[in-house]
Image (cartoon, rainbow, N blue to C red; front, top):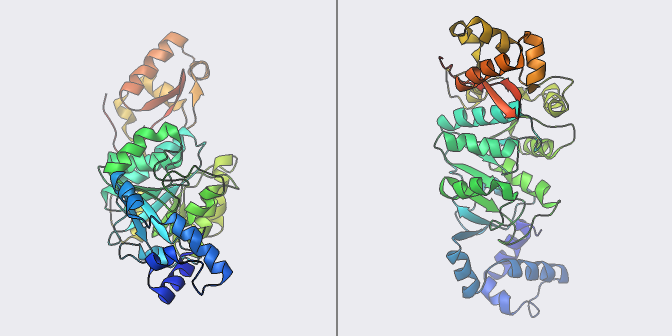
Length: 351
């Protein structure tokens, strides 16, 4: 894509895109800049008809020459010359955090992303991500659960819901936050667009939190871009044998902040909060003996009913009945048919 700095230089020379729109070939620009300008003018809705079309689609077109253009993006070497926005942009007066991670995340990672996003949002921190399946989507949903705004930067045009399975989330973002992109509204996603959008995600944020990531992933690209931009980087630690934790553990080894509760991140923003990540062991005294036995056989990775029953030495029917009681009480979740795992939460339910 064309760099915003070059567009600004052309503007400083001519002070009129309207003139250049009709007189590109007659201008004194070099061939390189003429080609750049042609691309920009095709990209920019210069005519009234195209601009009206954007307004009808409720798309706000913000150029680098406009006051609304985020100052944080101007710090990028290759900042985009314009943004297409549905909904609103993040409020520059409020703190923000990028929460990113694996698309093929674990249920544990999904719960963690939702939990952190919800707690941080409740404390006035805007959540920014990429609306991908997995960690990105979970982070957006956590903020929405808190009743706060959250913002998605797409690797395609703002008229395209990608992935399509996130359409419900896409609709919610339009009213509870915003969707933005540097690509034309109907531009389809392309593989190399996603690393490009990552620089915008990190630039719009004060800090980056990586929840789950493999050794080579787009989430690590976002973290590396954040480091280059002077952002604070946090990572959720995980098992050294877990491939989804290797990227996070690597970041921590390289100096990223280890986030084991939202409090670790809130301290960076100078926000104090007593809400720490807890699991239901604190309320196990509320459970009957058989329920405690079944719960103790569970982990934060899904286990099949047969495996749980064998470990607890209960028959399948009795084990299933106990698991149902734990699920109703909010102690466990069923991730797939007959697969169960412990549930993370802030507060403990009583049976």
